[in-house]
Image: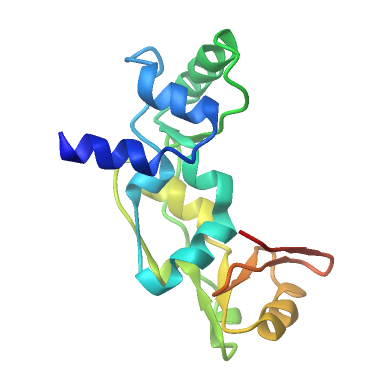
Length: 169
């Protein structure tokens, strides 16, 4: 089936633990896909979103903490390495972004360029709620000083607070 082949190709870059849980847990975990499966990103912002959220995109989505625990046991029992889970249970809709940062010229909340679907929508949105995209490194560096979340440039440089900058491919 072409859809399954596309899904497998998209997950080829995932860590071993995530790939194993997603492909072989067969109901033992109750997983419902990965975070990336539920995102639709405006094309021109894809690199920025990928850089900003990195490993979170391959986290396995589950409904409950019990399922996350089962997934951790499943991966550990097969020596699959680290794997992350995003738990949907108990998540509430993310409050609208405050009125300050989105008024900064050259700064856009990630929530404006990502459409989230599925049963874990609120949990995914909450994990991305305080992230921003800047039009330049100067804007990102300045904005990151006063924001709790990451600020990423269109070319994938991520600024977190005053002291952390990440980049590369």
